[in-house]
Length: 126
Image 1: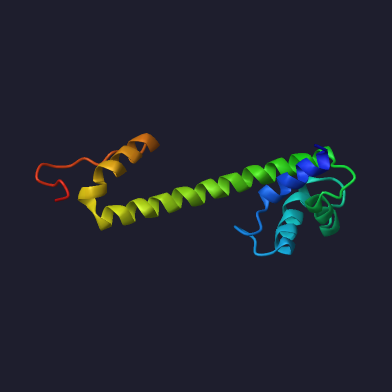
Image 2: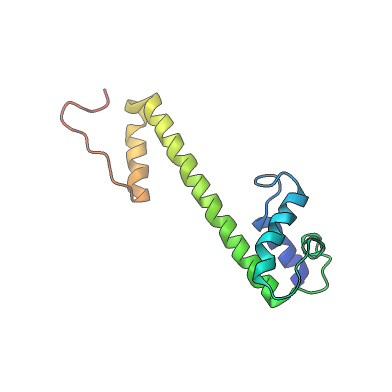
């Protein structure tokens, strides 16, 4: 696999079009905003599109490092969104049927390292 194909895939993962950005143009604009300050040469929309399409002749080390950072940032954003979504789902399940989902939610919280709920005598979600 060539560097251009590898970094094209990395750019597509760092700037996902259907999930986060509505169009390729929007993803490329964000890539230029993120990468341009991190490289010493001129990083234009045209250069971003060449990398995106896998048509770039070469990938500079600065561009590769910036793309790695972009991929890490996307991973952090996605992780944060997933944690928020899981918290909302936990709350919805707890509200829907505490008696049914109480033990499962407590086990998940314990695995995640969150403090467990303590039940007082006579308060068992019944």
